[in-house]
Image 1 (cartoon, rainbow, N blue to C red):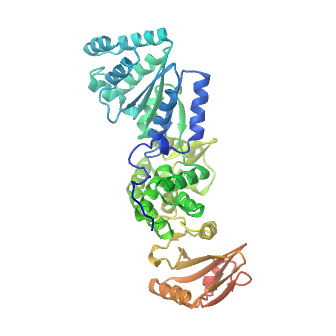
Image 2 (cartoon, one colour):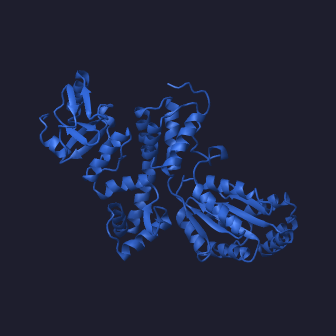
Image 3 (cartoon, rainbow, N blue to C red):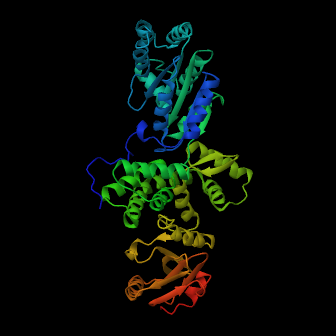
Length: 462
C-alpha cells in the first residue's frame, strides 16, 4: 500500500495542463509545419467527448503565442456568452482599440464594419489573428444572444464568418464535442477546413503517460501493469486517466485494482455506449449492418460505405488510410457483443500478457473472453464454449512446466463447483496447453490438450 498524501495526478474532469500533456506528437508536428509554411489556416479537430480536443487546443494556443506576428485568442463557447466582446477585450492588450466600433456594430446588429476595421488594423501591423473556438457549433446562437444577426439562421451566420476570413489576416482553429453539428458548420466552408480526426494514443505514448503520472503521484508501476491499463482502456487518453485515478485512490497497483478500475470504467461508459447504439438504431438497420461488416472485416458495398460515411459525421467512425475504423476501441468491443447476440459487457482480458495470449486465442476461435470477477481471483478468464461455462486459470512458464499445490488445486475445484463452471488450467510457454483434470502436481506442455475444446470434451468435472 503506497503512502499517498497529495492529489491524484490523473485528470479527467478538465483539460490537461501543459506539464501533464502527453502524445499528440503527430498533430502538433502537423500544426507547426503548417504554421511555418503559411499563416492562413482553417483547421478543425474532430473527435467524440473526452478525447483530448480541448487539451490539444490549449497546446495549439501555447504554440501560437511563441510567434511574434500572431495574436491567438482561445474562446471556450461553453462559458463565454459574448464572444465578440471577448475578442475586443483581448485585442486591447495588443494595442487594438475597437471598442467604439464594437458598440456601433452592436447598435446596428451587424459585424461587417467590425471585421473590416479589424482586418485593416491587422494588416497595418503585419500580424495575424488566430481565433480558437472550442465548441464551434455554438457560435451562431451566442452571436445572436450577444445582439448580432438576431433574425439569421446558423448557416447564414457561419457563412458570414467564412466571408470575414476570406482575404483577411485571420485564421480559425475549431473543435466541438458534438460532432454532427460541427461537421454541418464545416460544410459551409466547402471543404476548406483541414480536419484532424483524433484517435487513441500509440502504445509507447500511452505507457509513457501511465508511468510518468503514477510517478508524479509517488507510485511506481511496472511496464507489465502499465500495459494492462493501456490495453484495458483501449489506449484512450480519458479512459487511461479515469482508470489511473481509480487505481491511485485504491493506493496500490495490482491485478485486483486494475480490474476494479476497468469495471468502474465500464459502468461509467455503459450509458454513453448505449446512447451511441440508440443513435445507430435510429438511423436504421442498414447502419448497424455496415458496422457489423466493419467489425468482421467483411467486404463493404457502396451502400455500406455511404452508411459509414454518415457515421463519421456522428463520431462513431473515422477515416484512416482510405479505410474506416472505430474511433473508440472500447465501443467497438461493446458493439461486437451486440452484433454477435451476446450481452454487452467489458470484454478483453486485463492481466498478465500470458492471459492476453489465451484471450486472443479464444477470440480467434470465435469465443469471447470475459473478466472473471465472479471467481474472486481464482480464474483469470471466463468464457462460454459449446454452451458450457468455462473458467480458465492461466500460468506462464519459460520452461514449459509448472507445479500446482494442493491448496491451489482445491481452490480451483471448489470455486468451479460453486459457480458451476468447468475448470481449465492453461499453461503458456512457447505454445499453449490446456488441462481439465485439475489435481496437485506437475504440469508441462509436453502433454495436455492443444485445443481447449478437447480439454472440455474430456473433462470429468461434471
